Image (cartoon, rainbow, N blue to C red; front, top):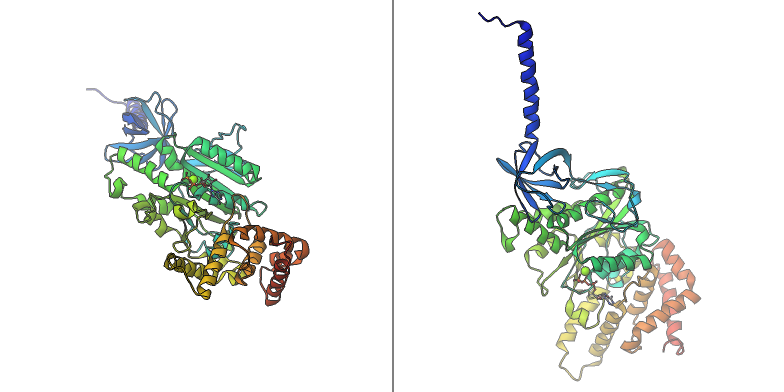
Length: 505
Ligand code: ATP
Ligand code: MG
């Protein structure tokens, strides 16, 4: 009889336990079944979680996007390189995250947080998850402070508040990016940190934009996150979330942040590419079923935090490119319904010389009015209606030759208003200047000036105010209110200016 000693039993158990460990570890090493076009399908990673980072033998990192019964699908953040069938893959048990910190200010980085501006390493203060649930209702407070764009037509009629999401929508080459960059430039010295996320743009376009920001001294408070058109689709897909994570770092530190996603149409296209490669079933316009969630979870992350959480905010300016003005396409309607309003840019207006080409009828800001300064609110009340009336009348009177005087006056007034709303690039207007312009306009003081000279007269008038009545600007800045006395003073000063024929040429 073979007698088994207790020692042998223990040894047997020990080896079993040791083998069990090995077996468990083996489950965390998978092998590639299929690879190509920025995605890989992996066998054997049984416990991988959605959103987890996996590492391939050659160091390339991927993120789990699809968990199926016997395999997982993941997106690759680098070119496939030497990944082939059978390449080993390990789990990291970590969710995708990006480095964040003060050191990123003024830098250009890629979607993974690595600097690409040749200015050396960036010291990270922390790592923030790329995907993070949006702040809940209790964590928020309603929008109560204005975020001034410095663009007269927007600040007066479609005001944006800190924590709001305002969509910039329009055809190609209608000045969408320019509105975003002008807004960033206007934040100079206002303590708002800006994050510009470029998705699927040409590297040269982004370089030009960085240059513009630099020459206007706006790069010091800006972080540019870029995933270029030549980058793989997964990198373009992750870029806005990485940008949001960087913005959240500052928001939770109690600061105000402005984030621009330029643009989400290309982001949706990148996601469609990934989804089709992962063999998800295509829906409308071949986008996958969850494309709404793609943008809603991103834009929900902008918020105005409650005072208990420091009162920081993220204001989002997503950009959407339409095809020949079609706002009822799938992605535009989705994003319109997620955001708190849109600024609609029209190519017809743009080419007729009305720049910025804001369409007054189709643009709207749903919450910003609550945050507008009192002075601005008071003076801009009638502008929108006046402009709407003008546009309507303009269409009706196109072919009429003899119009009665009141119609002619109204047309001239409307035309003058449109002229005043024109604004060259990178020339933000301060709130007092906007208020003074609008007071003079609504008092019909520009009526006597020929239309082609209105812009010049406006500039000269603001100069006049600066020299002869600087206290008006100061008072507006301090109180942000337009008392009847202050309004009278503005009207009087403006009248004095317009009465002087040498000044109004
Ligand atoms: P894309 O579709 O290529 O991204 P976009 O809609 O972002 O274009 P921009 O790049 O901002 O448009 O502007 C297009 C052109 O119009 C640029 O050359 C820019 O200089 C000019 N432009 C934009 N806004 C104004 C303005 N207010 N005054 C004068 N020119 C402008
Ligand atoms: Mg653009």
